[in-house]
Length: 456
Image (cartoon, rainbow, N blue to C red):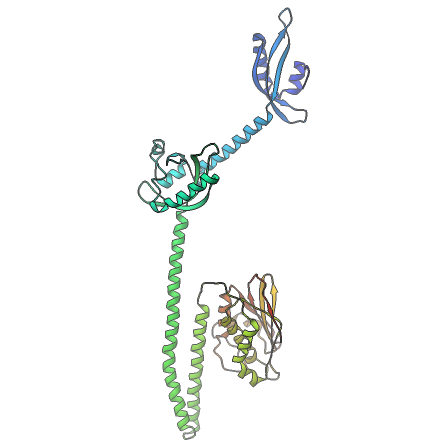
């Protein structure tokens, strides 16, 4: 405020109440000396905010020595004080971080010296604070030879751009053991040789990665052993079956009609039993392969209509035998292995024909819809339908409906479908009502758009 102001006004409306006592004391001392030394006060500003000023001046006296007025200068230092307060808050937060023990902090020099460090860093490398203060820690000396090139790259970044991208390395502890760490750092703004490094101990993460790798290796070996066992078991079981089947058929051809009716019936049972066992072994092998965990690679889109066509070719005999009608909408290309998609179509369409109504021509329709970033392939039929009590059970091994128009089959087809779909992180379910047919839905969780193929 320019111009003169009375002391009473100054004390009542300008100076902050908490600073009045020190102001009055300083004034009394200054009256005797004639000079008001520089002092800092809080003031109440006209906008209601609290400000800071630095005040200094000298007194003028009347002829009798009575102080008449103070001529002084007040400099507004509010912005400086606020900056100092912000700096103190920042330093306090940094100090809490450094002392928290969450992460190691190390101040370094290019010559290898560790200028200072917090307790967490010292604990990582196994040194004491006394050894730090004696200059016994050299960050270059505790870096193994194989990590020195990574260090050099990081130092290059610091010198060029003032900061270092995080990278992993190891330090050699005082006892000779090693600690894996993740580093990030920056140069000091006022220095071309010194900076700060933040150090995170990643021992737990590395241990977890090693355990995971060991588990994955064991799983891969177990999968390979399981696959080999499945093939071996399949071969070992098929060979005696082939022999039984061959001799049963030979007996059937040679003695058909030459023995009594019961003998012919028994031979037929033998031949049919061999065929069913062969089908069972084949489907069990297919189920084992479908259930085998596999690494997921990017699969190129396949022509869904072409794959469906191959599945229908394999079902041609049952389609012609039952006069089944199979139709489909416009179908998009799907990122699924062609052989897996073909197996799905064959099993679902084959089941639709098998579980048909004897009084109607079986009709099967295939469609595909996009929903929430996924493709849902649906296979709808006009067959017998499924009781709601069995909607979940049918996806288990050896589960078959008793009212099938065709008594053949192993009861493994839908279990194979479920395992195949799970390989793609998808799911399969059925909507059905007894007597009203069934619709099997297969969801494949894909995000990208694909090209659609024509419908028939």
